[in-house]
Length: 382
Image (cartoon, rainbow, N blue to C red; front, side, top):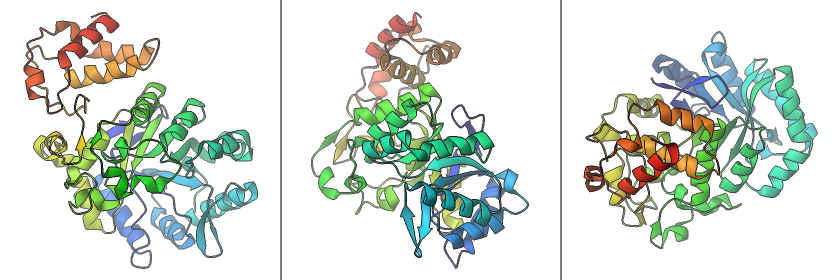
């Protein structure tokens, strides 16, 4: 298992994480089985968005004696009321839900306290200016939660939240189809077939800005919906008109700026092991570029996907990394010092480009790489 920094939190997390979708299977007996499998393969990051008391209790029992082996991301404002899940902003319900969470999980702390499901700017403003954020900050001050997170499907909301300086971890839906859709307060729009009827071209710029801002500010992204609820794995359901593999979906998410871990939903240990197998997959198995270039409904022409098909460079320049740092810098009026430092650490720089064009002949997306290298050399000074 490979591990990554979770933004600036100081935590190292497995790049394959575990969602909680399968914890309720087999009368919640699957929770222990899935956690056993996760531990066996080094998966240390878990998301627990559901407030179902049976699920929380089963996870609590499964964590006994090994709480410190897992990094737990659990959700504030996700509560159980009248026998069903509910999202709330009522502070008394939020506080009661937090108390129930800790009791059922049999723990006195949560590693990442995730403010749950914020998909409208109005909702974020009410949270930021009201008691929910103040309560969450108080939990962090007391050590009850170690870091503050927020979950969202809306790039406008997520960007506003991470720029506030309060959010250390962002849970966001990332996959190659959702990344084409503009911001909306209606999460159902991401699934709606009619939004994919026309020929779609290139990533929504607000989503790209969000990912780059997270990397620049040190906000770790934990990915949900990497498989689009499974639709991307089935050609008959995929909005792209063609199926992707598990490895391709995971690799796409893990090559976006700012991403720390992908939370995979698994309804069995076999499904979890299939996602963990990504760690030993070959470059060919992970490669999504050829599949993307062949999508009947979608085109990324001219847009760098960081797929590294441009390699090898005769001058040994890591073209994908240079391009990523260039995009991060171009989004700012001044080059962020962290971006300059990371660029400087590259063993070879854009100024070494001889404009031979070998990279451009291999790029499936028609990216003007020579032009990008010239811009990077001018911007970074070498």
